[in-house]
Amino acid sequence: MTTLREETIETRVPARLDAVTWGRFHTLVVAALGITWILDGLEITFAGLISGALKADLHFSDSDVGVGNSCYLAGAVIGALGFGWATDRLGRRKLFFATLGLYLVATAATAFSWNLPSFSLFRFLTGCGIGGEYAAVNSTIQEFIPARYRGRTDLAINGSFWIGGAIGAAASLFFLDPAIIPARYGWRLVFLVGATLSIGIIFLRTFIPESPRWLVIHGREQEAEAVMDDIERHMKEHGSAVPPQRDLKAMTIHARDHTPLPVVFRTIFVKNRKRAVVGLALMAAQAFFYNAIFFTFAQVLEAYYGVTIDHVGWYMLPFAVGNAIGPLLLGPLFDTIGRKPMIAGTYAISGVLLVVSGALFAADAITATEQVIAWAVIFFFASSAAGAAYLTVSEVFPVEIRALAIAIFYALGTAAGGVVAPITFSALIGTHSRGALLAGYVFAALLMVGAAVLQAVWGVAAEGKSLEDVSEPLSASG
Image (cartoon, rainbow, N blue to C red; front, side):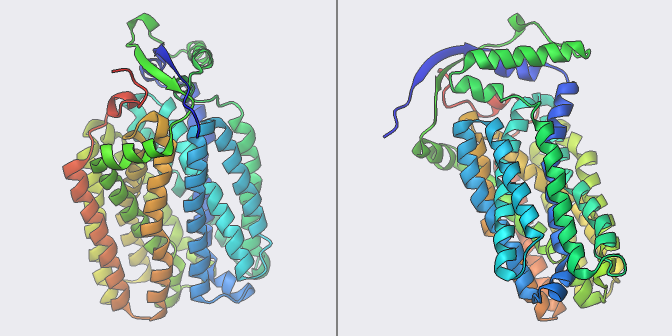
């Protein structure tokens, strides 16, 4: 049995982090850590576009394509849980290097897949790396960004997934065109490009320090103060305002080296059970909603509209742009209008719009171009909704268990909503029935509307508040 070691500390570290204005340091944090979502967008977009290439080269069926995609998502679930626990126990910095390293190796290995088992294994391991990134990177970003910028920053970073989506769509026009690159090599080259980009990101992350919030709650006060001094000195050198420490609120905590797992689960599912219900609903609904459309994007266009694989990228580009623009334009409203109305609103609007477009699809009343325009409009709102789910689960639980909380809800949401969606919708597409596919879309929409209702009733108004005010640290005195 592990013994807890505690010591009492009075600290102004959280207040110092929230008091500064946006500066060059924050931009560096966002660039070095947030780029993960661009890689994930590139990875998943390309995975959604290569179904034709996999059928031609590795002789996959539609179901095999769904299995490969679900293995990636299953890996993300396992990786989030394992790396999430390690991030809270060992530190943010160590883990965002470890998770990116795994992603790099596994993505490179995917390029050399030779059959369904090898492809599924490498996709599973790639997913493990990305799942770990969600826990390690989200917790780190949350703890560095000042409270008044947290909502818009988190949504913009999660929305940058679609910058990767746009890059993946554009790259497919080159790599998946058999007139330029033979089909058996094109899809493999993109995975190698993703692995190569990861090498540069590793070096960029060497400039990011350990989270001072994590350091101080683990009793490493002197290291936390040193990191804060470096941050504030860096900001002063680049013209950013840094208020005097004496004007800031101090917090007394009983620092300890770790939080036992029973305490973690009791805090999340007993003490904060309403927050847990909302978090799970948001994560599961957006995971099913997104993966239902995204992983079958190319399959729908091929099966129902006759779009060939080398032209799917042209349709993906406007879809990706709509997803990327949504969080940038709507993100500031989550910090001004507030979390509850904006999260509930984006979820409900996304669900209603999907039912409308699904009905038009089932009636064979829209063309391929009109279908993609409809999806782009839907996901202008749904992209912000999905980002808000990650924002919610990463700010409404105490700092000691933040990474594992993110991992738990990501894992539960992805397992409940994400893993089954690609297989389910690939099977529905295999029936060639528009009515069957509409039923799937209606179910996804109902999940989104249900999550909107829960958010409106039990959601937390976290806008502009310090993380410690949104959820008091377990180690806080009094």
